[in-house]
Length: 262
Image (cartoon, rainbow, N blue to C red):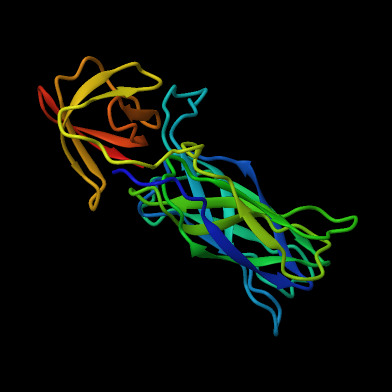
């Protein structure tokens, strides 16, 4: 899928006191899955407050020292809502709805001076190949800057934002700034490919001939492929000068790939 790389935008709510600052993993556990997600329990806020909501991040890249397996481990719990009104750190519980995940544990901290509560996406951007980070800029005095991560869909658009650290010392809602897509750069996501021109990957050096370019669906069909193209690399048309970055490559047959690009 091809399209210009555009940075996502969002807004944040302001919490005067008692937000969950962050959740720290003390045991990653094992056997957890992305779907269905582990159920993250966070103790309810006192009357008049808002209870925090957490979301687990699962990794299969860490090798278990005892078993040698890479079964799902909870490497982070980020906040969909940091809550408000807490006067003491809430308890964190982790449950696996299928019963295969065991052993994960976490603790939480709170902040009693201004923080962010919820980050809402106002523009999903485009062209992301990995989940982008964000920060919350504003006057925090002696406090700390809030930060978090966006969640992208298969089209490279940010659909949700989760807080990893709610920050402290804010007196008003701060400005949220997302990292730009890795493909973003001068002239990226511009032009229109021409039938039968040669396109070249700027990282792999792979070349191919254009069979069809659809600017509405953002798809490029190619043939006579010299080598494998790489996800995220720029691909430039030698005649048209069109320049985009690859989002994914789908093999359709021996001599024809469908390049889904950013």
